[in-house]
Amino acid sequence: MLRVSGLRKSYKGHEVLKEIDLTVEPGDIVALIGVNGAGKTTLTSIVAGLRSADAGHVSICGVDVLKDPIASHKHLGLASQEVALYPILSGWQNLDFFGRILGVRSKFRQHRIEEVAHSLGLTEFLQQRVETLSGGQRRRLHTAVAMLHRPAVLLLDEPTVGADIQSRQKLLDEVRHFAAQGSAVVYATHYLPEVEALGASVAILHEGRIAARGDSYSIITRYAKRAIELHFEGEVPAGLREFAVTGGQDSGGRQELGHAVIPVRDPGRDLAEIITGLGDSASRLRSVEFRQPSLEAAFLQITAGESTALAEEVIDAVV
Image (cartoon, rainbow, N blue to C red; front, side, top):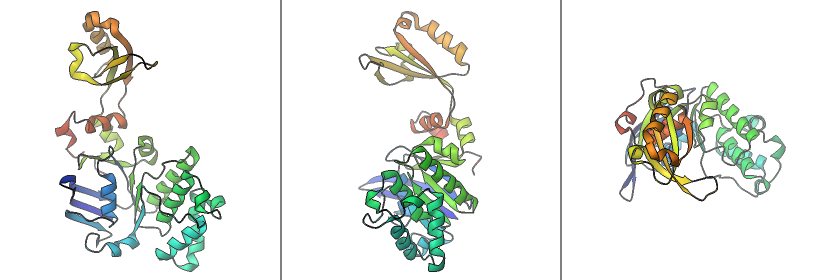
């Protein structure tokens, strides 16, 4: 459904995308995650035919996007990070206008507008002008436009920003429904609980490359580690300096704390040994936290560069 291979893109000599390879099959939901500036928006923009690429190949339903972006648009739905709606028109008028542009036939358009609006909890707001809607309502309407023509490939870039809990749940339900009907979905997000709620596979974009690709369980199992997080008054003791990370302040915002995160196998036993080894520095220990393996921990492990060689491998269980 969506094929990306060898994709490269640079801005002013800085290579943002480096040999990106990504395949999304019908029915797949792929969560595209990465730190700010990792290239998520650049990647989705190129796939949508809105930006050129320096090298590589992108195809949607067999159409070469880089050579003929217009032909690919009928297969594609895009809800970009920036909301693109006409503020002086009502929600209904926006959906009707974009439905015409997207080629939704008149005899189906009204039914489809009602259907998408109901799915995303927008029905009661359809007659209001967009400029009167809340940020979350606008973003749902923006997403509804992308879904209106039942595209084969759906690109969503941070679709739940500003949405309340109920709105977020409606959108996630509709994304799952969309995939169940055979669409390929690429879902860019910073909010990792949504990845698990969607049952999505994961593509972690780091330093211009897909650093890890697979289902959440495989990524957590392979990259995440149990760890003990120690906070000290003052600097991290010399024996733990290799585990030191950026410090912070205590709950009162007064004293700067040294902060160390130590990978462990047996948290209880290992903590006892660590504290015993602190000697006089144990008196400066202010708090201890246990980190369990999670998608967030795996993501931090990969993007922190602590295991670069491992992070560049592709997970065997590719979805």
